[in-house]
Length: 119
Image (cartoon, rainbow, N blue to C red; front, side, top):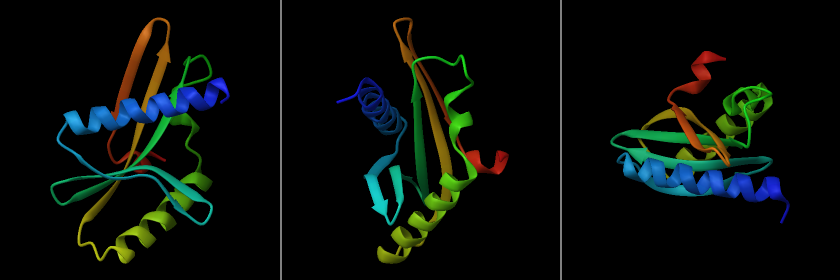
């Protein structure tokens, strides 16, 4: 497996652990719908959090969350619409980003709730 793929998988595991420690229930990981893949679908109370995880080894080119583009947002919205309808859910949906910098210096994790409001 390529090193960047391993970094991404490590980041998703860190994000899942972080969410669980913060009271979320993990509903799905790597949920696929057409061309979209939702990294994590988690629930806390009546909020369904759709979490995009971005992991980088450096912030030299910007924070990891800066790499979520409008096309990706559109794909995530379509995927979660399908998920909510298929599962007959009555929840508030929130789109979050967990940005992670993981390197020899350590791990920096930032959880941005309602992240797409800032685009």
